[in-house]
Each structure stands twice: as C-alpha cells, then as structure tokens.
Amino acid sequence: MTLASGGGTGSVRQPAVLFARHEFFQAGSIKPLGLPQGWGQDMLSTDELNNGYWGSRRIAGVLPETSITHPDQFTGGDALILACTQTHLPASEQRKLVKAWCALLPQLQLKTLIFSTKVNQELFDAATQIKGLHALSIKWSSIKSIASITDTDSLAALDIGSSPSMTGLGHLAKLPRLRSLRVENVKEAHDLAFVESLTDLEEFGASGSMWTDLKIDSLWPLKDMHNLELLWLVGAKVLKDGLLPLHGLPRLTTLHCAYNFRASEFAALRAATPSLRFGSPFEHELIEKYCRD
Image 1 (cartoon, rainbow, N blue to C red):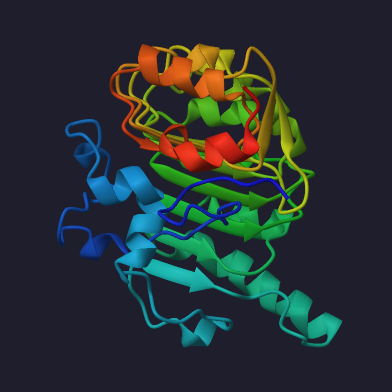
Image 2: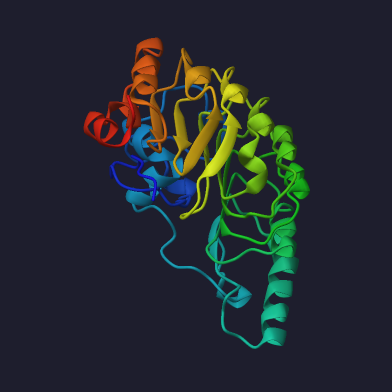
C-alpha cells in the first residue's frame, strides 16, 4: 500500500469525491463550481486547496442527499445523483432501466450529474448530450471511448473514477471551460500529454487503483500549467525526472501525492516553488519515514 497525504487526512490514497449542487456554492468561502464565469478570477479558498473542489463541497454537506434509480423518482432540479445500474433487477429489467435513462438524460436541464454506480458506454454518451452541463462525476465505469465528451463544451469540472479501458483522453483538449479534472485508474493516463494543452486547469489529478499505482511516464506535460493550484498524484509513481517539471509553477499551492519520491526531491520542490504551501511536501515525519534520502 502506498501512503499519501491529502484531503486533510494524512492517510492512504484519497478516493474520488463527488460534486455538490451549484445553487449552494455561494455559501461560505466556496466559489460557484461549474459556473465558468466564476473561475480564474480568484485564488482557491483554503478548503478547496486542501480538499479539492469536490471534496470541499462534500465536506460542506451541499451534495444532494439521496440518489435516484427510476426516472419517475426525479422531480426536477439541476443536480442529480443517479444510481441506475447494479440494482439487482433481472437482466431484462435492468436493460430497460438503463435505456429509459439514456432517453431521458439529454432532455434534462442539469448543471451537475453524479453517477454513483457503474456507468456503461451508453449512459456516458447520453450524459454528454445534456446541454449546459457544468459538472460530471463518474464513480467507475466500463466506458471504452470518451469521444462524445466534446459535446459538453460547457463542462467545467470532470471526475473520472476507475475506468481502466477508457481511451481518447486527448478529446478533453476540446473542453475550453474545463478547470478541474481528476482521472483514476485509466491505463491511458500513464502519458499525461492529454493535459498539455489544458493550461487553464486549476485542479488536476491522476492516480491508479486502490491496489496499483499509476506509472506516469513523466510530469513534463504539466510544466506550462501556470494556473494550476492543486495537484493530486495519489496512487501514482513517476518514472522519469520526478518532481522537477513542477519547479516554479507560479500558482501551485498544494500537492497531495504518494511518498514515491526522495526526500531531496520534496526539498528541491519546496525551494523552487515559493507558492507551494500545503500537502505532502510538508509532511516531514512521513517523508522521513517513507522516503529515501
């Protein structure tokens, strides 16, 4: 098991967390997640810098309280937690349920959609047809292609949970409003070239599964991400040049990562990046315990 700090816990890997309803985002110090005009104007709040957009809103208790399984349970609103698979229904009834949601989703006026059970290709493609969708979270999936994501050009926040067979991450470059992106257990993510053009990202994360690190080729595709404030490398191991590409990123404030680096690499990052204030590089006891000199 790989230790990592993050989310204020100082514990093992951080699981993916979900988006909150945007209508509550004006409360406290939390900015309106998913509303593009609110992004890129201010530094993130302390809560967001430590827990991410999604984690800060989960902790604030502003998620919808219950998930919905059947279409007739949805009474309206612009936020939905959907649990329409893994229902233990007979196979034929399960297929009918998914088909009904695939027909309904593109008709809904949602800002936030959270899939809390497994997502197949058909459900994902239906979700990407929701006009004006701002935030999408996928707990885990059997999605093969992410190509239809280009239809959601309003998307500002995307959380992709365990989806090992997913391909086409390069299509994310066509999302001009994307500010928060986390990708978990996607084999294709070993090469971070897919984020090289996403220079407006304020939060980014790439990780493996609960049991296996994602082996990232290098962090060099992040070197020009001058708006990046929060980086998650929990459950990840960098194969070439370690943390060097992050040196001097002007707004990088928090790094949550596995202790797969040398203590000297953390020290060099702290020295080269004055904006860095939170996260794993400052967990000196854990660095001393788990990192080589």
